[in-house]
Amino acid sequence: MAQGQQPILVLPEGTSRYLGRDAQRMNILAGKILAETVRTTLGPKGMDKMLVDSLGDIVVTNDGVTILKEMDIEHPAAKMLVEVAKTQEDEVGDGTTTAVIIAGELLKKAETLLEMEIHPTIIAMGYRQAAEKAQEILNDIAIDASDRDTLIKVAMTAMTGKGTEKAREPLAELIVDAVKQVEEDGEVEKDHIKIEKKEGAAVDDSTLVQGVIIDKERVHPGMPKKVENAKIALLNCPIEVKETEVDAEIRITDPSQMQAFIEQEEQMIRDMVNSIVETGANVLFCQKGIDDLAQHYLAKAGVLAVRRVKKSDMEKLSKATGANIVTNIEDLSEDDLGEAGIVSEKKISGEEMIFVEECKEPKAVTILVRGSTEHVVSEVERAIEDAIGVVAATVEDGKVVAGGGAPEIEVAKRLKDYADSISGREQLAVSAFAEALEIVPKTLAENAGLDSIDVLVDLRAAHEESPYMGLDVFDGEIVDMKEAGVIEPHRVKKQAIQSAAEAAEMILRIDDVIAASSSESDEDMGDMGDMGGMPPM
Ligand code: ADP
Ligand code: MG
Image (cartoon, rainbow, N blue to C red; front, side, top):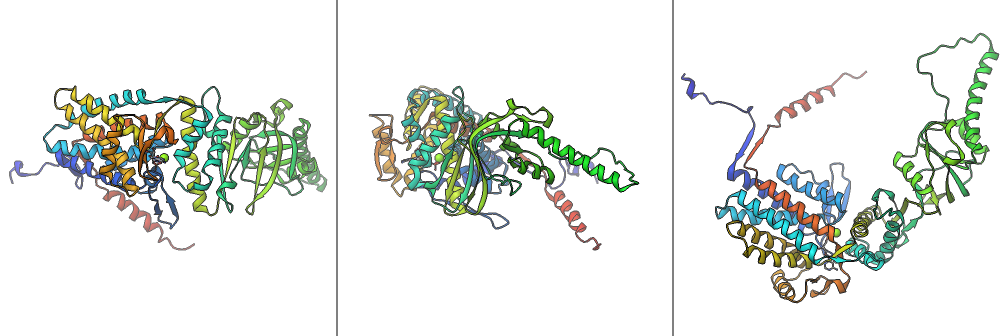
């Protein structure tokens, strides 16, 4: 056979490959499907999704990023949109659904442009120009505010329609207090706000603790349940006699030697406990284990001790009480101790927890989230996390925008004017970008059962008067969102538009998808399966 007739295989057999328009069409479709999935959850009137994993565990949520994380997404382009949601979550903690649906809409509009034979590079360039301009416009319409009243409104807007209804206002107060408490030099470390959840009470029974709650119990029943004016030691070494590193053999020829040996070990433990007690500590949190005998001596000395505390909790305890985490028991001194008004073990719906409360100026606090069932508590927790994110962003930036689709309509309007000033085909892409932003108010209207076309027409008209006009989804009216108290951090919108544009641009620039076959990994799995057939021991 002549050589030229042999097919040349550059890639291994089974590799799938899509080129040019096929690649674009596929990627755009995947992105659109993903955006379509989360769309129905947008806004206060958005619906929830029930996600069931392979083990049958259920999550009921309205939170964009949670839905996308729980879904097992395969398609590479769709995965890029999931990344958009995750970035939004990390950077701001809210606006995840918004970011994804804007990205989906940008892809949809790009498809129309591609059909008009506009080159993807031109579209991508137009989108980038539009995204930059959108940031300028957002800066222009942002309102400077970070007073307490604003912060509470921002928190309430983020929680609207997320299973917190009755308790929205008290929760918002609690969240603002928490964020203000941990703020240091205008920066908020969200990790310093711990969220503990326990079902079995109403949502409005949630509380803010000026300190840390540790989901553990004291190690010994003989220890006090409650210590006032606590002096707290934090240790990250075990309180036990170290095992020898090398195997050592000890030959005992006489029972008294055995006795001496045991006594010596006991003495070592007693010394360790003594050096802790001598510093004046009456509460001890240990990241590692505490030997039985040490527990006994600590109890005798009236110390409340907790063992195997998580590293992250140790750090929070340090932030809240001012204690230093000490690695060597001998190094522990009075100066390393922290303080709390009260440390106590409390029973919360049948389970013991340690409350470290009444700390002076704590830089770590805890929100104890309550709710009737596990699913309710989890959804409320997600709403609180979003709210912490938006309050923190507002404290840090001091800038907010109106909600209810107002900024999207305003940016779209000004972008359309900007498009007119551009020559060349990018103009079409900039106009498409502007229209894509209208997906936000459009979806808010649809999810509220309103006619989206009417709403858009009314909104555009209202923006001739004021940039703050948005859709009140509860009574279907177009109102001034600033006055209605529906406000969001500036950063949420900036980030959502920016990352949606970047993802769309990246997907558009792909003209070749080369995917390795996954059959090999299936074979590996088969081999593993064979191991299951090993003869029983
Ligand atoms: P995301 O994950 O993007 O934050 P949400 O489901 O939280 O999605 O919805 C956020 C959208 O809902 C924002 O556009 C916000 O302005 C809007 N929104 C919140 N409260 C109201 C309200 N009372 N009236 C109209 N729109 C609102
Ligand atoms: Mg939200």
